Amino acid sequence: MNAPALLKSGLTALMSVLFPEKCVVCGRTLVSGEHLICLHCNVAMPRTRYHLSRFNHMHERLMGDAHVERAASWFHYKRKSPYTNIILQAKYYDRPRVAADAAAMFAAEIQPDGFFDGIDIILPVPMHPFKELRRGYNQAEILAHGLSRVTGLPVGDNLRARHGHKSQTRRGAYDRYVNVAGLFDVADAGELTGKHLLIVDDVMTTGSTVLACCEAVRRSVPDATISVLTLASATLD
Ligand SMILES: [Zn+2]
Image (cartoon, rainbow, N blue to C red; front, side, top):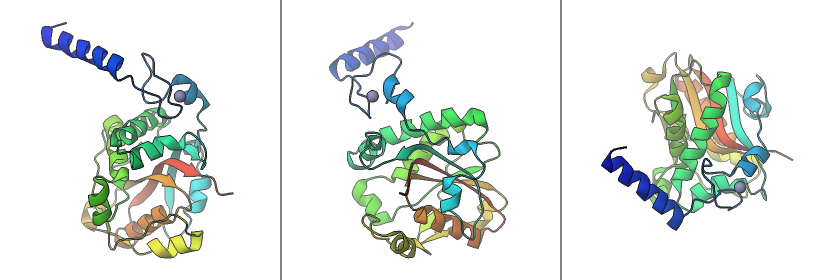
């Protein structure tokens, strides 16, 4: 090991003593070899494994004018589950790195099953610019870059928000749909013609936001193939 590398590994070791990395889910201090999530929480994670079935609960929610080819989500999102921390830490505690690392872990898990085969470009669900300005980043875009880190796929910015849509919290399924329908469009349709696109968002609840993106793509680029990935998926019950 040369001197700078030695210094760097020494500093990393020192930092981990001074500021030990904690499991995002349960808060326990991570041990060597663990990253983001401790082994216990990783094994116990309520994985959806949706990517293994050709027609899953996400496809069901995304039934509309646009056909969805593949759909994947890492874990089931339940309101009181500690796994929601993976989303909330990134979203509300200003830790975008959590989102990127979580997406990279998920990508590494499903890549061997061929989920990314044939996909050309990753398109994050856009956020209204004013909201992005307030938060400083778009969570879906951070996720997209985490996926890209593992898959090597490019991240596009071709999906655009047309108007500010109000917060989705505390709205019924129909209200949510009406709230987002027609709110996205494609900036440069030519760039996406004939391509297989992966639309990415953090959580799918009713699916209305992702569906609105799928329909925007279908309107402008009818020959594109659409797949969808979210980090978590809420069970509708
Ligand atoms: Zn844990």
